Length: 167
Length: 435
Image (cartoon, rainbow over all chains, first blue to last red; front, top):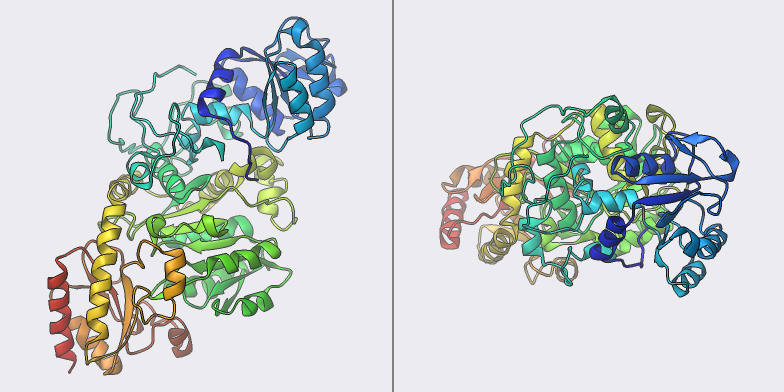
């Protein structure tokens, strides 16, 4: 499970700070699926998460309407979070590139275990930032010291006092 | 790995910096710099939905100190960081850490391979108590990799060794054992208690899980019994289909699959949410605090422990009442090459010697010491002495005692941080009493 991909803490912090709305492709309505965990957590942290899943289009997940495609989402969103396998991440990234300008997409984020170098290359060439093989929930938790509550190695060393935010 | 870099820093911090800082940022609400002791059982929920998210493991946070506690979590993160792992789970003792590790891996009827050279209490736990869970063990001389390979069965779920074996002088060939484990698609579990992460880094050699008795060098002060399991985050629990506890729907969490949901955090999540929840062998916050204090000086203590131990071992090797000394720091040790590879900073401070006068001489020696404490612990700042055959290893058969390096003539020393001349003078006096 170790990953050769490298992202600096500052890079990830900037993405999570500048993002307000996330389109989550492959969001599941089942409460015990990983995507549901991530969606619920990110909502609690103040993000708007819009589920994309053609199999459930028109229904609701966690109070948000499910759309069949990125193009069908009304309004803007800065990030596309891909909860699909590495192969399926290719066409999703193509769609994100196609509607990037229209929707204000800045970041294509592929989940833990999802790596598609060809798609990443295309997205970067189109001016998008790409993160692969990471989970925004886990990274948010790690960078805000919440992951440490579970005994995880955040790899963060600091003697600065963190600002307390209400969650 | 990307995340080794600290926020805003371009370089990775050294061991000494991490042993003081990892896991212990200033407490954000009060600004308290030393880690507060959260002597506290339970945590208030914001509302019913927050409570549900916590119980479903959908968000990070505290519910009840049997599962997680902020002071214990600080120690967990520190140990995970020092070992270079993904996460840590602290628990009530070193023995509890072994139950917790195997509990995640084993089903009734499953099997594992353990070194013959283990702490005597571990041999008893694995060979006797684990049988009640229908967990089967084969003890194998791990100096012979082929013997380990031959002991593998389709039900084998792990290989377990001590990096530096208790009672002493034996170093396990971690790289060779990790290769066998990898071929068999099972994890290598390493007890790193005697070496500590300062002397040995088992994950660098391919180990998958590390267990500790934190009671020993990590706390160093002889105050607090505790244990820890550290997960490297590198093992693929799904690939072989051998680990349903980590990579199949978990009935106690409505079908949640830990590996699928938490990725490289799966083991540590499971060890808290299922292991500690249901086995209940939690570390107390006060013990975590006292152990954290110990880790702040770990490198300094280990350097002195190793230097003192080497001098003492060399003195004993030349003493007429001593038949042999088993210490990997000695040039005469058959494990010298392995020690140089796996323990480059020193071969620890716990080792054994054999007395020419046998069992009787062993008893006389422990009773003849003034400065050494006669007790069943290791890794204290105080020098400690024990006659395993009459104490820690007395539950074992004579063959098991001999295989574990704890025969009737054997005395175990844990060399402390006193003035080394005083340590040697005390042993000289005690050895005179054996004549």
